[in-house]
Amino acid sequence: MTLTAAGIAGFILSIGMAVDANVLIFERVKEELRDETNSMQGVIEEGFSRAWPSIRDANISSMITAVILYMIGTTLTQGFAVTFGLGVLVSMISAVAISRTFLLALGGENRTQLKDLLFMPGLRTDPAVNDNSK
Image (cartoon, rainbow, N blue to C red; front, side, top):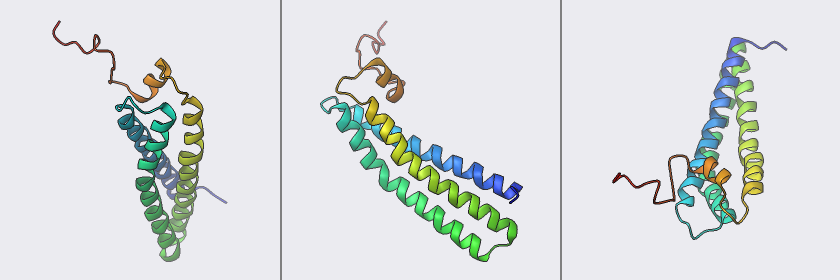
């Protein structure tokens, strides 16, 4: 089996899909962090549940596109479709299973500086930091 330019393009595009899924997850978690009444576990669960429909829809439409390209395409197009389809499938599994596991492992009850660094760049909860009157 040879990896062609079309296969490399499919691989790069599937990496982009994986990045997009993780950006969606982190942005949804960041939105949930603004509500300081929720526990960290609750914030992560809610962030994932709000990001999942977008991730699912984007990946399903990409998989349908890969199947159609494989069925009607030439050999190069089929190589792109196979590489892209496998990459999207793996990125969906990794975004949901691996990222979720890591975030839940980090998500203790207390909000620490590490969690603020991961989820809230640019957002400060300390009013002294946001004081623009100086």
